[in-house]
Length: 197
Image (cartoon, rainbow, N blue to C red; front, side):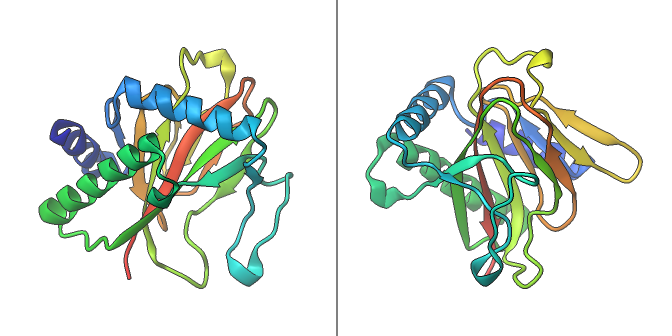
């Protein structure tokens, strides 16, 4: 586990975008994907929005995914295993980089065919608690023609990241604009933020 943590941090320090292929195991990724599909079948997922609290709006011209927030109180063994992994990563990140992370929030994200998320930052204008964004992908056998890439905008170039199962992406929430390109296949992930008080 610490090897994956170190890979994520080292690649972030090198390029402002951390990428690790085995942050979560294949077994856990498959079980999380299956759990997400069960929640979708039970119609528990809700349309995602933009903004927070009083500024919250839903606009499918900007963002088309549906979500479900993870919480240990759900007593789901796969959610709990994922969040325990996040807690271990936070301890490692704080110890090795003095990051000062004190909390987190994560949700499942499901994009149906034809959906996308326009270019944005992950930090609210009136709340700077989100320090780092972290995305874990749950998609088996993803191909280039399936679309749905994460496009991260940097000063001199854009980086396109395929949402393949087990791949995890990590970057500062207030620094890099990014978008989810139109997906040609159902696209699943767990997306969230490491937070400071």
